[in-house]
Length: 371
Image 1 (cartoon, one colour):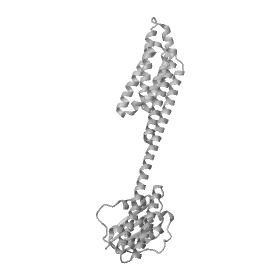
Image 2 (cartoon, one colour):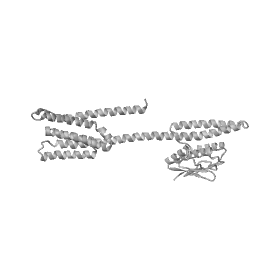
Image 3 (cartoon, helix red, strand yellow):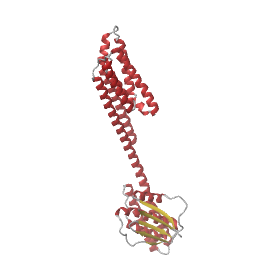
Image 4 (tube, one colour):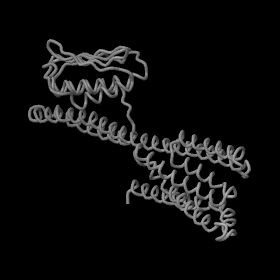
């Protein structure tokens, strides 16, 4: 079983438990309707109490059913959800009016349940409007309609609407935060994969190119110059070990390379390819945060010269603002950029630099510069 599958199963289990717990809470709140049910039952058939009992049962079932399905209503499209939500709420509200008509002011708590239903299924602004209308209606009934309920019903409506709206807002923000965290985690995985593939391409592309040239050179001189062939084979061993170490570093997340080291490797690679190198004898004073970008530029530029340029000379120039790698080979091609150059552009962009490839006559110029 994979980690993702386990996480999904835990999430499903947690969601199922939360749904069951929420349903229990919905049912438990119905205890506040028990006094009204008892009064209706006590009046019996003569007082129409049984009709009130049936109305209370129907109201309770509609209330529980609507709140149990409120999560599904929120997952629907806006137009469908709002229409169905209003229909469900209107059913609960209509049954609430029937309860009040049969039982009277002693069942005033149904107004609070009706307000809670509105908050759960309707958009927040509309639910707030329903809450205000219920409070106004209850107070108007008390003031002008001879309604004998107390102010606790209006207070209960206001409290339930305020608390549930705040709770919905908190749940929505937590949901958004959870989704944002999941998206950041997904993007981090994608970024790490891209980083590893880019580093592996650049490391192996450069190292294997030099190894191939060294092996070819050793094969050419092995008969008439065994000492030279032996030296080339020793270089091959060293290059292979360095490449293996760099791959291990890349796997471990280490990304840094050294500019001075890359200039030395450029000399080795170009010598093996028969290309004369003109480069600074030492690294000039360059801001520390630019060393790595310039080092990758030297590696990519020299690799392209060795692979594609068929050049006789290569010139590397450095200063605090830019690095340039120029050759006198066949120049730029019309083919799309390779992975190496695209990876260099990504690295440069990350550090605030830009990559420019331009044609010379003859040859090609690769520039990486900071603004």
